[in-house]
Each structure stands twice: as structure tokens, then as C-alpha cells.
Amino acid sequence: MEPANPCVLTINGGSSSIKFALFEVNNSLRKILKGEIQRIGLSGASLRVEGLSPAENRLQPVVAPDHTAAAGILMDWIDERQGRVTLKAVGHRMVHGGSKFSEPQQITAEMVEELHRLSPFDPEHLPEEILLTATFQRRFPDIPQVAFFDTAFHRDMPRVARLLPIPRRYEALGVRRYGFHGLSYAFLIEELAHLAGTDAARGRVILAHLGNGASLAAVHRGKSIDTSMSFTATGGVPISTRSGDLDPGLVFIWRMSRASM
Image (cartoon, rainbow, N blue to C red; front, side, top):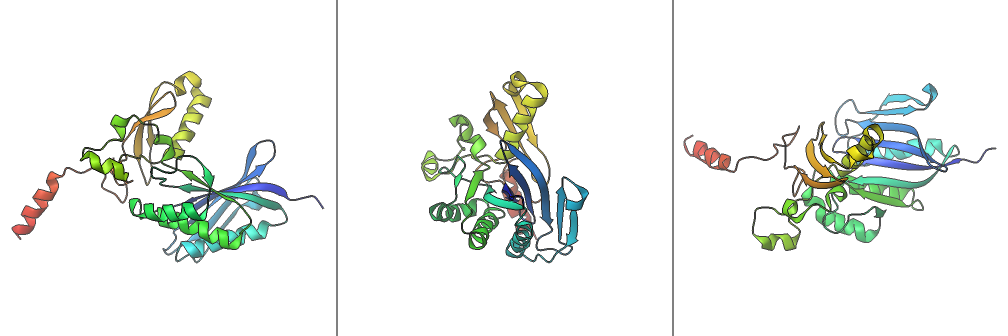
């Protein structure tokens, strides 16, 4: 019997979905599967898997009233593959690392405690991402988990881009522009280098992350120098469930309209 292939699982937990991919580990990483549990907490939830061959493909309805149930479905799917693959590590996309976390690192109890403190910065995503790490820890306690932070790409922005137009005393409390979608931007820079060459990727580039969530970033020499999202992911351009930046004068108009009702 052939030994099981060592693999790494990557997870991107969203507000209503869990995207995942399985990579075979040899001299390099090779993606052998990708999938998604969609419509978590909604009717019509489903598990979709795409493999290297049609035999690996799967699309089936599931019952996923919350992320805990969805994580259980994903872990059951992993258990089904035991014997064919050996899971060596799990990587998690984390939407916010605050001012403390800027490099990929193994998830510890201390990190989870700090991430809970950051949860109000992104209550739509971060609590579910933390929940996923805890659920995997209970089911697979011997498998290391690593966090990759979406804010890390913007960590070296010039101070003028990080500062917000509020009293400076708040900066000491960690209130600053962090920026998001960093893992997407890092991928785009790598793809630009692949398609257009290193010189183009290291030039002055405007990148756009467009979809259910959207943002813009200005990049020079492969480093973020400015971005549209701010202290939380609610700032910037309008997206599906967030207004983006709004004129504060609208509050005055709203109060006037309420008074005249």
C-alpha cells in the first residue's frame, strides 16, 4: 500500500462561506483540490469540491445553519480522505492582525486571546475565523495551524498613509489605517510579475480587489503605500453590505429630517 500524500489545507472563512484548498507537499506545493461551503446560515447551502479529475468533483446540498456546522462538514470531508492524504498543517486567512500580528505564525492560545480583543474591529468575519481555528483544534489537536493576516501587506505603509485625521492620542491605542485584502494584493503582485515582468510589478501600480468586498491599493516596489480601507473594513469604496466612506454632513441632514417628521 502506497503511503498517504502529505498535504496542507488552506481555509478562507467568510461571513456566509468557507473556501478551502488542499495542496500536496513535495518539493513544491501542488493544488489538488479546491472547494467551498456556500450560503452558511441560509437556505440552499451546499458543498462544492473541484479536483484534478472529474471523479473528485462534488456538488451536494448540506445543512449548515452556522459556521460550527459548516466546519463539521468540512472536517468530515477531510476524514473521508484519510488514508489517501496525510494532513500536515492548516493555514487560515485572518482578516485582521491589529498592530501586533504582521507575519504568518502558528496559532496559540495567546494569539486567540488577542484576536478576540480585535473582534470588534471586524465583527462580521473575525469571530467566525477564530471559531474555525478552535473547531479544528478540537478535532485535530496534533495538526499545527498557522494564521495569515490580511492586514500584513499594508504594515509598511508610510506613516502619512497610516494616520487618521483624529487626535494623535488615539494612535497610541492602535487606531490607525490598517488596510485589508492584503493576501489578494500579494497574489496580484506575484501574478503581475509573472505576466508582465518584475519591472512592471515593482513599478507604481494601482490594484483593485473587486467582488462582494472591494478596495483599492497603491503599490510601489511591491509594497503598499496607500489603500482605501481604513481602521476597519467598512471604510473605502461602497461594497455589498457596507456604505464605505460617507460625508459626515449626512448625519446633520438625517437629524434634520427626523426633527421635521
